[in-house]
Amino acid sequence: MNVLAICGSLRSVSINRMLLHAAIRLSPPDMEIVMFPDIGKLPSYNPDLEHCVPVQVAKFRTQVADSQALLIASPEYAHGVTGSLKNALDWLVSFEPFANKPVALLNASPRARHSDAALREILKTMSAELVESASISVRLLSSSLTEDEIANHPEISIAIASALFELQAIASHRILR
View 1 (tube, rainbow, N blue to C red):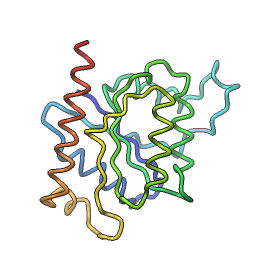
View 2: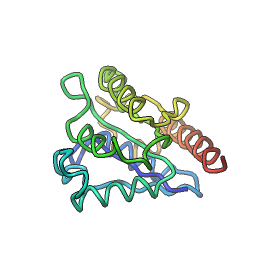
View 3: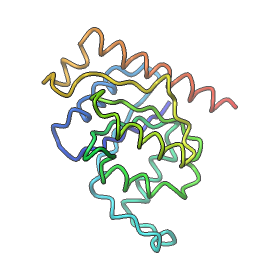
View 4: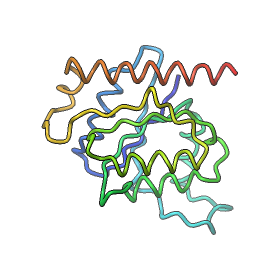
């Protein structure tokens, strides 16, 4: 099963990026999670370009289409979704292979309630299949844990692994339909 991971932060040492990398390490043996590395390189969404999609957007859309599910982790900025993540999602609004795609959210800060709620609303509006049982919040914001420590933390690693098994179960069921 192929899962595309999307980090809404552009920071190289982002907690959300570390959380996604830990998820990659904790994924079930028959699940391959690949990080989309170029969210910051996507051009600003422009509906005039829908008939001549930029190369970076075409690559992103191909990766989304080729995945059976998405895994998103993003920080909160000014009580909202980051601009880079919103821009990436805007490029998927009219992209049919995104509709009904299973999506799980990893929230590295339970305090990030506004962006989490906004992201859920955006995804529902876009007809994503939000997998609630695979969407989790973990307290990483002030923990200063490294990627290794996140992946090896008894409670956090179990929560991540459980979320991934849930995502796999839902996405696999969808594939069989």
